[in-house]
Length: 261
Image 1 (cartoon, rainbow, N blue to C red):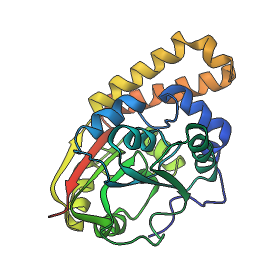
Image 2: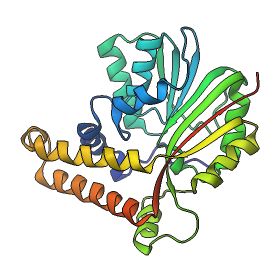
Image 3: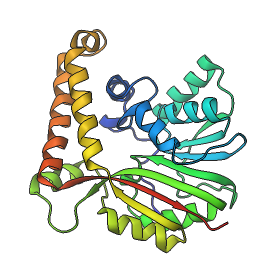
Image 4: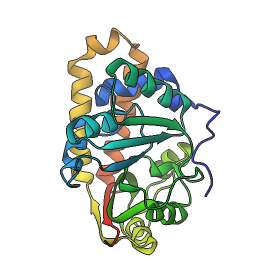
């Protein structure tokens, strides 16, 4: 499996400025669609219990990890390839004196981890950076304890033809997208059972609209920390995603499966 990003190179999407700019949309400690609201929805699917171990891949600023540890008493290992993300997350561990949460800078594709050591594998909008999803899922299956679960959300694409504009968008962004059915097949082929590959695009669109409205309503609050160019950039990017979803090219996928007990 190849690295999704070079850990020593922060692109424009992952500078401290751009990360904190995204956080303004998604909410404190979050850089993924829907922020805390979606994390709560997803956690409700997992039957999390005190003492469980969770591997959070692409842990970002740590929002999901902080919430799971505090609410359910689980232990979370957050792994991210962005030095800046990990640095900020570690700053916030100190600020909160958060227990049960650890963040490391590493590539989950290659880092050594004990097999069958996690009750839950979790990832939000991160696997789009990883080309070899088949190899990734096989490794994650080995890391999942018997009876454990995997829950992933990610950008996806429709099967077959997509618009030239959308193809240019995800190619320029360095994303590697699959349609939900093909995505789910990798989970099944890795060994997971009862794999649910769900098209969540309607929920994604709802969240995009909410986030755009929030940016516009709280414009002055946003501009207290960022520029009008930052605001225009985000509104354009969100509008583009809404357009790709409306034409059917862009899909938002949720994938959930279990390892046999």
